[in-house]
Amino acid sequence: MRVLSFLIMLLTLLIVKQQIKSPHGSAFKIGCATCHSTKGWYLDSTIYSFDHNTTRLPLKGQHNEITCRLCHKSLVFTDARTECNECHTDIHQGTAGSDCSRCHTPQSWLVSNINEIHRMGRFPLLGAHIMADCNDCHKSADGTRFDITGVNCIDCHRNDYNSTESPNHVKAEFSEDCSSCHPINSFQWTGAGFNHNFFALVEGHSELQCNDCHTTGKYSDTSPDCYSCHQDDYMATTNPNHTGANFPVTCNTCHSLTPGWKPANYTLHDKLSFPIYSGRHAGTWNACNICHTTSSNYSVFTCLTCHEHNKTEMDNEHQGETGYSYNSPACLNCHPTGNSDR
Image (cartoon, rainbow, N blue to C red):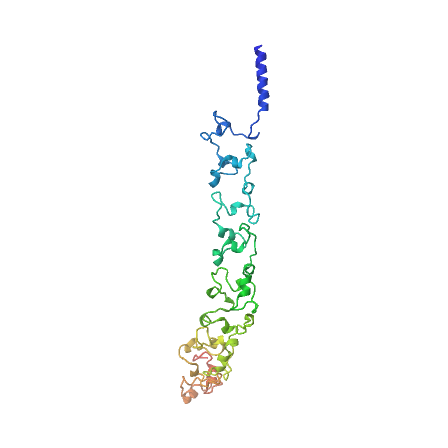
């Protein structure tokens, strides 16, 4: 009888064990004592020792403060989701992507890395854009959508382009690529923020107003050649007479961009005719008319103003020299660099 009773009890236990299943799922391997005590099946916080940081969702920031059942709707813990948008409703409606961690942290929903986010995208926030409000570019009814409005300047600044009168961008047919004139890292539209590098506004040109050079109101038709703006200066100059002397109209051959026209510096003189800025003649003169005594014709020059040689002595010294003549062109012909030897 005792053997039969034992077999009946053993069979009963096996049947009950088969019927009882863990509410946490068949794959759950954590021992009951990790969370429960003999006080009852409710979580016993005095003995709870499960390390949640070993899971795919470590508890950080605000996740440390919430109750288990907020994420674990059922007692089968493997049913819980680990992606942000699987628990949190996407108020941005997909316009900011599905990776919430690009902008938010477990500590707070507040965004602290807007500049970094934009640097990873197609429109880094530089210059005045650093100070712009998100809703200035990302417009939506409730301010939660971040639809891309475009990454070209004109996409946001069409009204600025159309309404600008000084100068009139539409009339002047300016490019709609605002960055060709306005650097994106600037904090203002005008002044130092204006990019005129295609014709550098430096030195003598630094104080000009736009309409000093752009006289027609159509800015694309202004020539970068000096003469196109300075023809009147060229025609009116008499010392020396530029027209009479048939000077080239490439003003920068003699003049630099320093305020004022003087002193002119004919930088090509050394290369094309006679070295006056280098060699023995460097620093020995201070005015063009020392050598060019005829202001109406700069092809005429004299060496004898400075080199007062006695003709008789020079004739005797140059006896037998082919092509010798006591005149300046002959001097240059034999002494093209100003040295005593050929």
